[in-house]
Every structure is written in structure tokens, then in C-alpha cells.
Image (cartoon, rainbow, N blue to C red; front, side, top):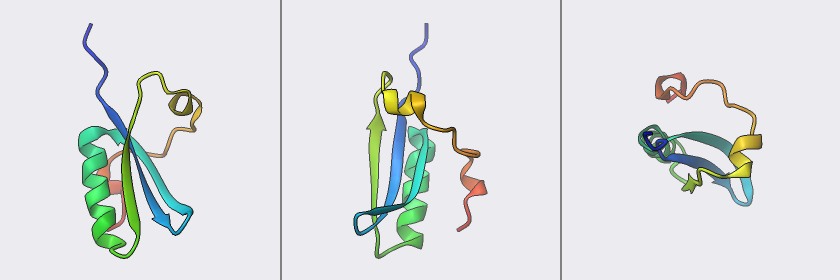
Length: 73
């Protein structure tokens, strides 16, 4: 059985408030984080691994589309 691909959670922060929250496979998450860092240069962008057994991931609402090109530049 093939291991599941690593997923990451990328968040864009305005102070203590999350203004964007995105979950995807590691490669897409990395590209998203880079794009958001360029777009929101003054805001903090974090990228954290999501454990395979994360209850947060299991209970989270699915986000609409994980394709990078659906994200406005």
C-alpha cells in the first residue's frame, strides 16, 4: 500500500486573525504559500504539516478546489 501524500495547511495572518486558510498536498501548498507571500508581502504566511491522523483534517469542511490556478493572483 502506497503512503498518502503529505498534506500541509497554509494560513495567511493579519495580526492574530487568519484571513486565508488552505489545505493541499505539499507541492501545491508550497506554491500557494509563495504566491500568497508575494501578494500579501506585509502579512505573515505559515505552512504547517497536517498529520495523517489529524482529527482537525478529518472534521474540516472541504475547501473549494485545490488547484493553484483557481486562486486569484
